[in-house]
Amino acid sequence: MPDARRKRGSRARTRRRLALIGIGAFVLVDLGLVALALTREPSGLAADAEPAVTSTPLPVETTAAPEPTETPTPVAEAEAVTPTRLLSAVDDVTAWRAESGTCTPGTAGPSPTLELTTSAGATWSPLSVSTSGDPAAVDRVQATDAASAFVVGPAGTTCATAFAQTFSGGAEFRDYPERLAASWFVARSAPGTVHSPAGDRPAPCAAVVDLAVVSDTEAGVLCSDRRFFRTLDGARTWDAGTAVDGAVAITADAGEYLVAALGAASCEGTALEAPSATPGTVATRVGCAPVSSETPGSVALSGGGGSVWLWAGDDVLVSSDGGVTW
Image (cartoon, helix red, strand yellow):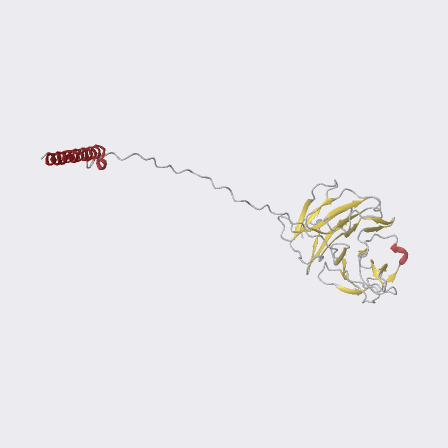
């Protein structure tokens, strides 16, 4: 009996412990459900609530960085070249002209040809410059009238500079070597030297391309860099020079210089510019001849007897008012 009672008491205690454990577990689960209910939002509350205000970023104006621009590189003007044509005006109807020609040392070439007009360029008469000295080319031509003109240029197989002249309108030319020393010229073989009646003198630049003579002591030169210089003492000294854009040829008449220039503003042709007597100042526009030539060296200019002649391409024009009109 006592054993039976002990067993029953043991089972009763076990049941009480299990009951307590079950009650405790139930309490824990119930507490968890209550906590979950308290933290959950009521149905529909989130949907009905005012939406949270969110700031929309305003567009920000941006200034595009300027694109880099290339700075144009100044293009150097091409150098002027020695005219391949020579012109010497006497008056408004008479002039002489020539092509410069070539001379090759060791080779005898044909005699150069001068042309004479007494009709303001309407017709030209060809005249052969033939002498015992065998002129080969022309570096300078200077006329006095319709009967008299002289040429300076290379001659013979050595191409040495020589002087030949006619007093018969070109019917006959003769060599006058003694007159060469008293003449102005720039030999093609020495463009950096100007010969005057005073002798050989250094040019004011590396290369002279044209020469305009006023007297035994006064002359002007055009250099390949398109600067114009003048001398009053036989090329012993030169002024500071005047740059003339597009200058291709020069001349002098009655002590006044004129420069022919191509590509000048407001002139569709060949501009006539008068270099200032004050070196370094801008030349003055005199006029605009309605002809020009793009071939280097193919423009010649000459003044004489109050007239100005221009030979450009196939055209020959004459001005009787100093180059203002043509």
